[in-house]
Length: 319
Image (cartoon, rainbow, N blue to C red; front, side, top):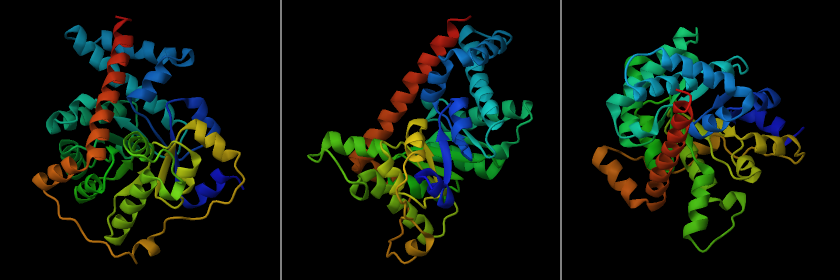
């Protein structure tokens, strides 16, 4: 079997893309999207009709140009999600505007608006994961969405055990710890410039989160994300889910090496792990003390915001 086939036996494979052709090729269970992926897909000729549909939708709305562009943006994200759900049997993750990362109320409102749009296309909310940044405010928004509205959430831009624990205690459905971006930070900020998979700081971070969750019987699922190479992916075989780019899915498809299971519930439960007790002040302090997590969270929000603005400008050019 290929490495990809072996992984599918122990881990739910998710495609990290907005490209329908790639989704058809690799047949993942779920798909994740983000502003960068939607921006990239929106510039492709074969998806031009979706952009045009979204623009026409925005033009029909009342209000200022900015309001109508925002309506078109939300509609476009849902259009991509609906097309993806025609292909995959599972769920699609749709991300809310990164500029709302520190506003709990507006994050909840935006999420409910997206769910309503999906419903207008006949898509049940059980097939949607709302993606929010793993800030304190984003986690609180997810808690409200999960407990009051039964909307499932995917907490993204997650770089630390502290964020992961806060998400699990809030009862969120899924977290997406970023493996590759943790590696990027360590290469840029330490003397070590290359890591073997088992020593990769991003891999170690996800393994620690996995063991903590399973040891403490948390129901929140873990989806490793943001991979830089297939070694990182294979080092997390057995994780609940792994979201993988088309380029790395292709490599795994042609890899005939053995992929042993690295993570298991039984092994996690044998670990001696101290349980964290978090509240807002402690969360903020521990994040402040973790330079990597603080840097990468802020950097991720800025980058997603820049791509959101680029997509807005693309849509605005058609008005």
